[in-house]
Image 1 (tube, rainbow, N blue to C red):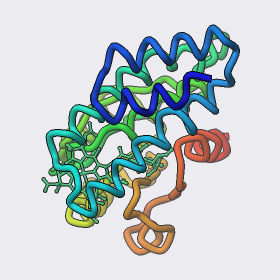
Image 2 (cartoon, rainbow, N blue to C red):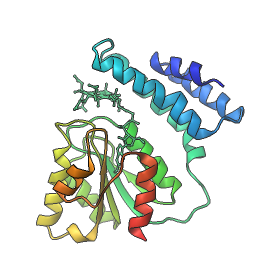
Image 3 (tube, rainbow, N blue to C red):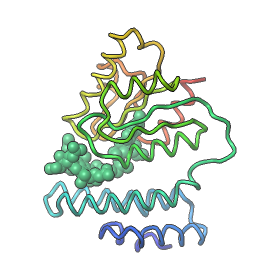
Length: 209
Ligand code: B1M
């Protein structure tokens, strides 16, 4: 119910309509995970395929991404439990050179839902910022997202800098994003890689416990 309309509005970058359809679907009792996966993510991934084939271009994808984030903002309170004590503190960001934030935002929501306090540094975050914020705020986990093969190596820069500063053992480092693999995670010395936001939250809980 409303999922198809939601997907069409997302594809056209109509943020208000997407928010409206998300609210209507919630009111109609559609499961929030179905709204997320079958309404929002499905449309975004179909657009991604067209982007790959050069059938749509950056501006269309950008406004669709804005509409996706608008839809996520309506879903967030339903994805995030409100009565949980902080499980730990997470520093989250998309690495330097990378502006993709939808997956990172989902990771933040799922972590909050799992009871973590999440400090989201945004996109294009350099290694100094990841490390200085983790130190300043006494974080337990550093979570990094990358969507580009050209930026995923910046995750290694953060881990190398943690090592150089003698801080590596202080933090659990988790990574993810479409081009990232578990093999890459072990190559660069990350503590964990997960394929999606929900597994990231579950793994984070396991690692801090
Ligand atoms: Co970009 N883009 N993009 N883009 N874009 C991709 C990633 C691409 C695969 C498209 C393609 O060619 N098929 C391609 C990358 C190719 C590569 O490197 N192999 C690409 C490219 C090339 C580019 C530009 C270079 C295009 C250009 O300018 N010529 C440019 C780069 C800009 C930059 O970052 N410097 C660019 C720009 C953009 C937009 C700005 C237009 C827009 C981003 C807007 C925004 O995010 N606010 C955009 C988008 C939207 C995409 C696609 C279409 C969708 C990405 C997305 O949000 N997916 C994407 C194609 C695709 O992926 N199919 C594409 C939905 C999101 C929920 O998935 O982020 O993977 P994802 O998150 C997943 C998991 O990966 C995981 O959890 C989520 C699911 O639960 N996850 C983690 C993510 N982070 C995690 C961290 C964890 C654990 C799990 O632990 C910490």
